[in-house]
Image (cartoon, rainbow, N blue to C red; front, side, top):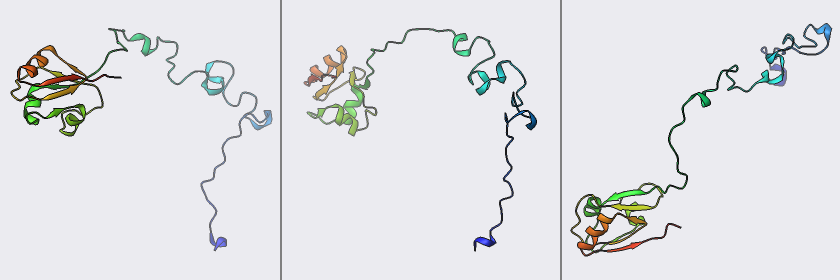
Length: 147
C-alpha cells in the first residue's frame, strides 16, 4: 500500500537567503543596501503612508462624545395602549416579551399618543408628559433604579 504512493511533485524549496557570499543571496539577502525596505519586517507598519500625513490625522475631528451618556430603549404611550390590558403591570420584562423592547438597556416611557387604560408602570425613566397622562388615566408609576 505505502509503496504505491507517489512522491508529491509540487515541493519546491524556497530560496535560502543570507547563507554566505557564495550562495549569491548572502550578506544583504537580496534586499539591496541600506534604506527603509532593506530592514527586517519592511522597516515600517502596514498602515504607514510613506511619510504623508496619516488618514487618521487628516480627517477633521468634530463634536463631543459623552462617555457618561445613558442610552434608553424608548416606548411611547400609544404602544402601551395597543399591547396592554387595563390594570396590567408594565415592566422591562413584559415589554421585552411583547416585542416593544429589543436591547438590554434601561427603558424610558415617552408621552406620544393617548392612554385610556390604567396601567401599573415600573420603568427606569419617564417623561413629564407621559407621567401626567398615565396618572390622569388612573395608573401608577414606579421608577426602577438603573444600578
